[in-house]
Length: 197
Image (cartoon, rainbow, N blue to C red):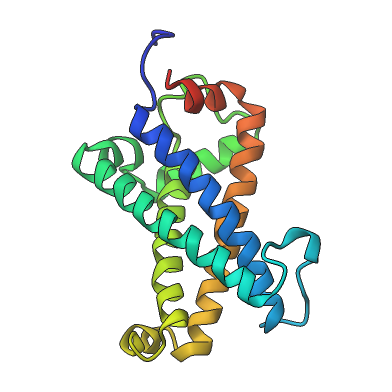
């Protein structure tokens, strides 16, 4: 592979970093919102939250949500219509997943060519795109439970939508944590997302 080969076009890099910023704001403000009415017997430490109080957190959350939704729409449109998703994320087969998991646990999962995703990466990237869409749909159901009652009912009503939102957020935060660790372990991938090649 040529060192000058473009791995991530400019539109992918820009939308990636805007998504990262918007997700950070939404997660931190969402944790403050969660603390106002916890679903589980724990609270998020206030030092990890944003907004100061419930109304402030809601303002941060909605501001970041509009940025995120618009940016994600651009990213998804580019990924679908350019063929990038088809080329980078598919196919995903059970046999390839188990083969790559085996290689991972033996310490032999290759990252020689950062332009090509292994099957675990493909599965996780496709999974986080799905989780982000679920976050938007469940968020709409929480925000406007009457206007989107059919959508909320698919998730078990308002409280069900809150649970779906929480678990989609937890998956996304887990993905981001693994993503950051992998970027630090394979710094060429981080440089590629900054420079494109």
